[in-house]
Amino acid sequence: MNSRFCETAGTDPIVFYICGPTASGKSALALEMARQLDGEIVNADAFQLYRGLDILTAAPPVRERSILPHHLYGVIDPSEKTDAGSYLRMAKPLIEEIQSRGKTPIVTGGSGLYLKFLTHGPAPLPTGDDKLRAELDARPLEDLVAQLRSLDPVEAARTALQNRRFVSRALEICLLTGQKASALRDQWESQTREISASLRGIVIQRTRPDLHARIATRTKAMLDGGAIGEVAALTKVSSNCEKAIGFREIRALLAGEIDRTACEELINAATRQYAKRQETWFRREQWLDPQTVG
RNA sequence: GGCUCGAUAGCUCAGUUGGUAGAGCAGCGGAUUGAAAAUCCGCGUGUCGCUGGUUCGAUCCCGGCUCGAGCCA
Image (cartoon, rainbow, N blue to C red; front, side, top):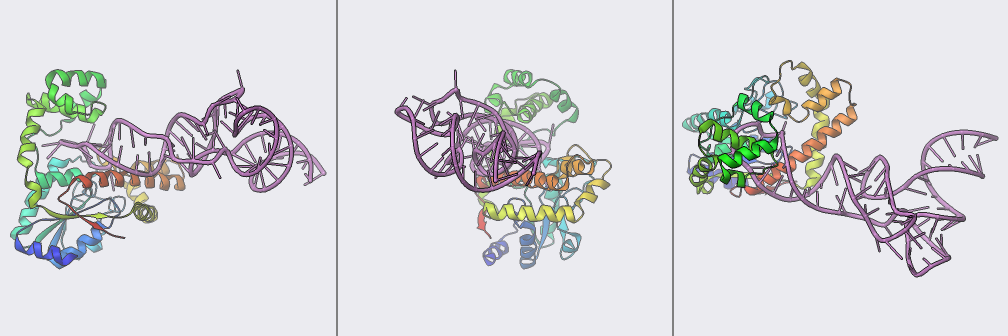
């Protein structure tokens, strides 16, 4: 199975992608492939970017990272925010630099949106604006929907109007650019045709019972292995970083609001739900080659 | 041993004055280009403990049994 990818890697300066749901074994596979392909690993996980949360976010441990180059792990302070655009601005030059040294970048991670930025490029849209978002968040959803409908009826028709995030973002684009979000998005859509054909990568697939068992094992190991200490040690955490699965649950445990058993089960459930959403995302990325494991 | 209460979805429970049942959580499916481990949409998945009886019809009423909790011995 792996030899096939070694061959394709040899023909062109390519980037190899290893995707899949959380706890599916991406990191281990990435390490093995990096050895075979003379590659270097590039993180594509939105939360493993944060520093000091290796255990909570199931990032490869430092001893593993020292075997061969691992990039973009623990590079952002938990008090900071990040987004798919800034991830792309870090990852793209890095990948080119790795290639310039004759190495194969092996991108691995489970953040579908971040991966999509890397594979299909950014749309010509403005970065989110915290101040504007705070203003929009303070207004009723119907109000935002009405404004979006008047500014950009095409975008309103395509947007899931019950989803405040999506409505808010569409409106944000219109307000920040003075243009129609729908028009800007159409530009990008037309640019991205054909890109998928040039991409190489796999998505790890496991049965649900297998994946759920692996999640349970990992959650237990995290809680036993220092995740609680990591959370306890954080003093300043961005609203972005605190969204990490397990963060809220461990905070509740530390505050005595829930017991260890409840904490573990809440994290398990949230992780299972996340894994399911990841599977849904990667199912749509048809350029990925499914690899059934387990 | 006697009495009382309970037994309904994977879990916690509601309900049907008799017409085969519904919430939350879990689960399953989906959307998703700058918050994405986020956010949102859709779906009830069932021998109503077992067994007799009454009834046109029982998850519901009656008897017996099983299991669980409590009280009395």
